[in-house]
Picture: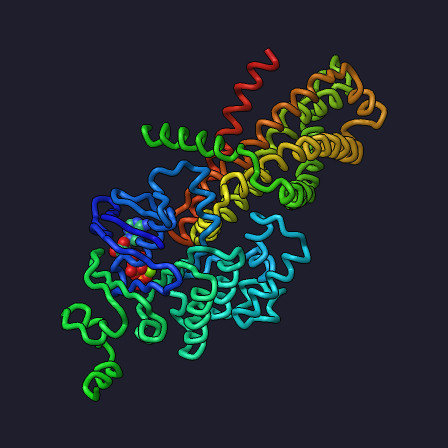
Length: 250
Length: 247
Ligand SMILES: Nc1ncnc2c1ncn2[C@@H]1O[C@H](COP(=O)(O)OP(=O)(O)OP(=O)(O)O)[C@@H](O)[C@H]1O
Ligand SMILES: [Mg+2]
């Protein structure tokens, strides 16, 4: 569980996150939705500590990040996995080395154990034969999947995915969504996913947070989301013709 | 001016964070030897070409400038040897390395920064400064003295071969001159300078690469800044060390 209290963040005096309060639950896929530029990426980067926050608290299962020293913060980070919006694979390393990296760096596993774990993770993302490719040789969707494999290599307790399925075809997108949902439930991970894909929202959203201009505008489940009469949220949800028709027919 | 001081301060803090204990020692040797290979041995071809031609030009020019019949021709060997050891090999080669190694380090680390690879390492809990930069600095501190010794040797050979071929000096005179009144301390002095320069040509570009923000354009400009700044640092340090060690 991650508790976020009164989180504020600004860049050069421009408020990007404005007093956000939210709790991300364990074993659930917590979705953060919102238009482009609403602050999703900034929020997740604040959560993992890549951006220093202006004020507020971030509490990981009772452990307040703001009271941690450098050492403790690094230890906490070893419990996190993150999938970046653009993948952020190490481009000088093969797929296998990318996935093995956190294991080599932070576990005491031997070579054969590491190889097994890498195979397991790559199988899990449906890339059983990609070991020796370099990131530049992969398609966008394959990169995302390798990034997911790398993020889950160390069995994280907290998983952050920044638009894991942007730029993917609908089918691969669903495969990835379901993969994230399955591992979240299987390993009791606290998962936070940024997305603006309504398909994912309906498919895997256990809990949904709608960000609007850096504020928490709405919060609820995917069923609530379809019924909401909040105008901004409704505009977002029913932006596409398809969803408008679904609403009319129901 | 204020910006310059802030930058220098940030650089020293960066260097301090670089010299922390690696989180996993067992990964270090592989990274270290990889850097020895790419930063050090990878520079050998260009060092060889420059050293041989530098030695040749120094020898021929010195010979043409000695017109007085009272100065023996073996002085060409002495002068060529001393200028190669004292200045040309350690300083000029380090300046060349500031360009070659410096731009490659700055663009490598800068690219990792703008493609969020450094952020990915940070989120995993890696000490990124130590992990990315320490192997490069230690590899250069280790291998550059050898590169400079090789360069000195090549410079003198180049001077000898081209000096004799162009007829400005004979084998006997040059060989006698190279051995005449040799101060071993000059070599020590060259190596001390080399060690300082090795530190500069790796840490300064790493700093500029690490603090790149933006995209491909900024990676290019970091790399340019890195080369310019490390070259200027080399010239300043060269002046200070010459004052301290040779006066
Ligand atoms: N490093 C930064 N420096 C200054 N401003 C930033 C920085 N990162 C983000 N911003 C600003 O913060 C706001 C929110 O950006 P953010 O990247 O969080 O949007 P987002 O919700 O992730 O959008 P998208 O769906 O397009 O990824 C934007 O207005 C952006 O200009
Ligand atoms: Mg984003």
